[in-house]
Image (cartoon, rainbow, N blue to C red):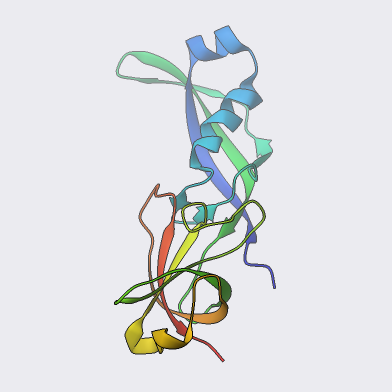
Length: 163
């Protein structure tokens, strides 16, 4: 079960003419502009690091904003993202047990603790018997609610124990 999805997106990007004259690598400048969203949450979900690829870009169009000349490009690009929804099921690991419940994370490639995980999964004690779990346990969860903060490094989920 893969937890990430590939999405094709379109964005309009404006670049200062002086940056293009200095760098002369338009695709590189556009890619750097898009990479600002990697490892962060957007409306498309958590954008996985090093997953952005430019598919196509338009020929630039010169525009002026506040007496500054810019070149505007329409860019089609591909991303890998994690966009949880209510009802999604995840296998996660318990990082911490508190009076409030269980704090869990997804163990992905390169992720070994809750601070590195794109998803923080909170299981309130109302949804589980915290006495029967210990740190490091692997559990199945189902998303009950979620909170995505724009440009945050993690998405917060409230979940319950799934069968």
